[in-house]
Image (cartoon, rainbow, N blue to C red; front, top):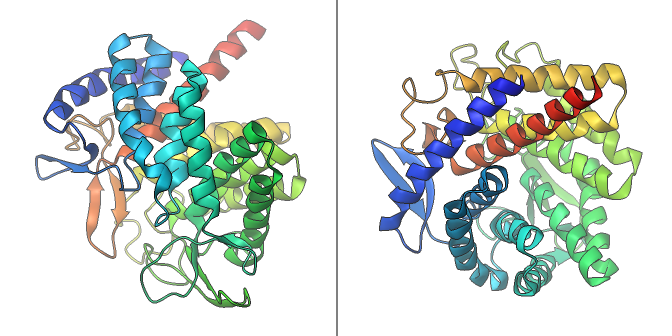
Length: 375
């Protein structure tokens, strides 16, 4: 497995070397996807903008190549303006992934101050009467909260530990607790969107926006749940969060329609299965999450989770989900589904699929090296 991982990382390095060249024409923008033979980019305000510099930091740490660090720093600096953006809940993706990595690697106090400011902005979207951070400011909902929002909580724990302000931790645990209560069905599957009454905190509706239907299981959302509750357990050692992470994971890995190659259908309830679209982004998020989750469970569960990870990584190391079978441009992987109901970014590369793929590869490499030493 170690050889496969190293070969996959070498491919990722080659692709992102080309990505850096491609992005020279887009000085203040960020790669988003590759569609119809063209690079699709976004401004720093878009929720996926931070994944590109975050990926570069990971590749720099692995390779030691200075050009990755230079580009990562420049693009991370462009994200700093978002610390004042009160109109999005996605600051964990936008700020903490790139600038958290930058601060961990370089230790620049300026990065930590930006991060702390962004965390304060993020918790301004928290309403005690509801107990959760509001997600969207648009649409038919009054106080919508999406399962993706679990991915902000790691950021708040960092802010609490860095500043000594327990309020960040309080918000994170409150958000996770209410998510357990209202975002999960009895079988361990998740709703994408739960809408609340902002005055009372009562649930108004539970449904799905980017999945097949309100009663369906959107696979990327299920992946966010696995990853987010695993991080909650890391920070708190509260076994309620560990059980929730395992419940969400087990729904996927034991599902009768979980494909043999480990790449989930975009929605577990699409009536078109087995001809339905797969979602590589869901697979990479799941793989990276399981690689941490396996460290917190018993031996049998750990073996199960690791076997799923290896299935996913082996599948993604072949040509089925990248060039030449998939048009990927300078991205690493194709075959992701952004928003099928809106017919946006369907069966294409996505920057966040690449990020979690790189992270999963590095986590798997670390495990392989540890196993070698123990033998």
